[in-house]
Amino acid sequence: MSRKVVRSSKFRHVFGQPAKADQCYDDVRISQTTWDSSFCSVNPKFLAMIVEASGGGAFMVLPLAKTGRLDKSQPLVCGHTAPVLDIEWCPHNDNIIASGSEDCTVMVWEVPDGGLVRPLTEPLVTLEGHSKRVGIVAWHPTAQNVLLSAGYDNAVLLWDVGSGQALVELRDLHPDTIYSVAWSRDGSRLCTSCRDRRVRVIEPRSGRVLAAHLEEPMNLQELDTSSGVLLPHYDPDTSMVYLCGKGDSSIRYFEVTPEAPYLHFLSLFSSKESQRGGGWMPKRGLDVSKCEIARFYKLHERRCEPIAMTVPRKSDLFQEDLYPDTAGPDPALTAEEWFGGKDAGPLLISLKDGYVPPKSREFKVNKSILEPRRSQTCSDGGSPGALEKLTEDVRQLQAMVTEQERRIAVLEAKAAK
Image 1 (tube, helix red, strand yellow):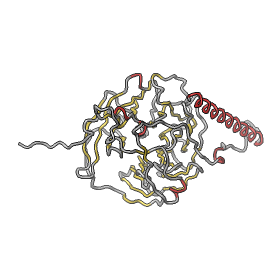
Image 2 (tube, rainbow, N blue to C red):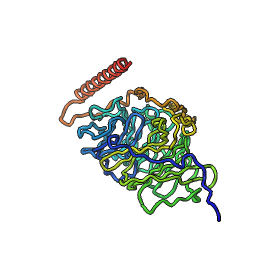
Image 3 (cartoon, rainbow, N blue to C red):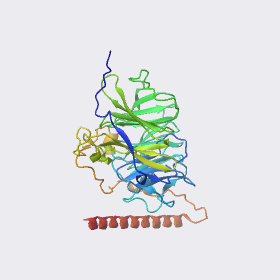
Image 4 (cartoon, one colour):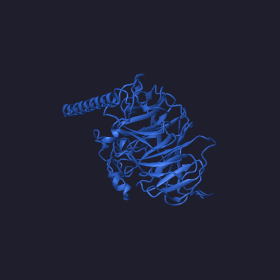
């Protein structure tokens, strides 16, 4: 009689634990748009979700602690003139988020510490370069202020957000709609999937395609017969891959190893309700005291439910084998260095003593691109000079409000001490 050998793994018994009802976010009208993005992005300070909104596109930003039933008057980020299709927090500044929309623009926003007390309608920067709707935004993992966008015009643009310029435009690499884009860990490569059923590995600055089709898979896993879109998440610290599908009610997770068969199924988390999307918390936002190695924010039709992935351990001590040094919030390169040809891996931090999100960091943007674009004549017949004066008054008022918010933050910090 042969005996089946079970592969040893410290992640074999990882289990998913849904948050209690009072730790969920209720009464959220998740977007009904049919685009296949995750509709959600999260970091150690904020949770952002794309929501239904009248008169344009909007998404909601909540401090992580603001759980429970939300007020219907909750302010939104609502500067787009058409539905928002994708959002992503900046990995180097927890107060900065980018959004792509059907209005063909990308906008970059700054959320104040503590969240929104009024609707946010003025972005830091509006990036215009796509001729059709923008379905994907993705920040560079190690270079500051570098943002990727991909649109229905089959183009990938690489922006220096500080100057508001698209310094690289990849317009001839994809013959059809781009479904997804992912950076390598050091940002030296891109991987894209396209409607033409090809996966491309691209050197982004030169536009050179390093591989255009993967005919022989390293491993083949049959999941189910559903045709829903899969949302993969890879954790380089644990070499684990999590797969959840839109319209599905489960999360499958696997471990990747350097030897064949390379991909090993670990377990499955299932719940009764299917997901419309969801976001993964960066490793620095997890609770290491509970051996939490991942956290998924699952979007229902009217609700967001955090699900913690935990390794069962009896010891209360820090588990070093579960938490190698991980990517921190500091960039390794400037935008100029990366566009100039340099590459660097992430700057790592230890989670041994936990991670405390810093106060909002300064986001440097060329002041000239912050001025709102105005037509030379007013619709009501006003003169260009009057409009310019009004614009200047608004700018001064915005500067005054910003200064007051800064002073309040300083006073709060002093009071806390």
